[in-house]
Image 1 (tube, rainbow, N blue to C red):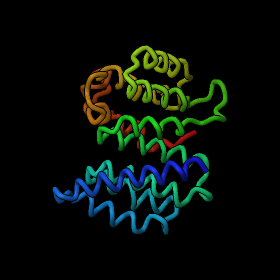
Image 2 (image 1 turned 90 degrees about the horizontal axis):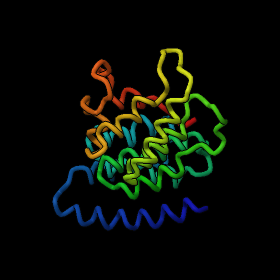
Image 3 (image 1 turned 90 degrees about the vertical axis):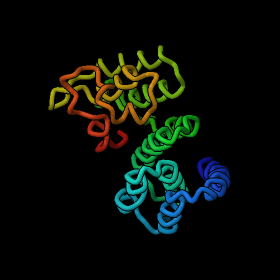
Image 4 (image 1 turned 120 degrees about the vertical axis):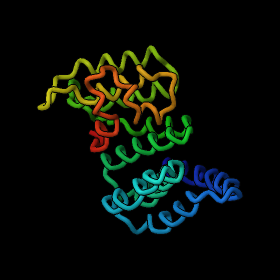
Length: 207
């Protein structure tokens, strides 16, 4: 139960951080505590609707990530592999939004699908590789991952899944993750300016 051990260590660390931040009366602490009191009782759908997404919508990104860690720890036996990978991915997103790149990397490593077939569409693992490369500041690996996504067949809407989202990492390579997710400037082509990374990935689940 490697995840359980990691969760305990992480929660101890997170608790100390939250205790220090409580001095500034951060409302996200109260929001996070309210959600975490119910996390163990929620199934996956309930947690998706009422848990981390609610915290993220309040811009409580660190609290959102912490709630995901707690949910995964308390639902380790019943969570499906796809649910776990999806939540690991979203944990990486919200931790990256809060500037915790190293923690985001830990979650991305477990967001990949070990059973993904060669030539799969969408190529989920290459998108995760692109995200990870950006976090580690490896522009060569980022370009390689984007190249792999470009090899995909187009979907029914004429797009190559996650390619636009991955290119945002390159266009806004030196900008914060929040910009990469939300700023139209990070899109490669102006004609796509009505599409945001959130639009491209909000419905994604790990393949």
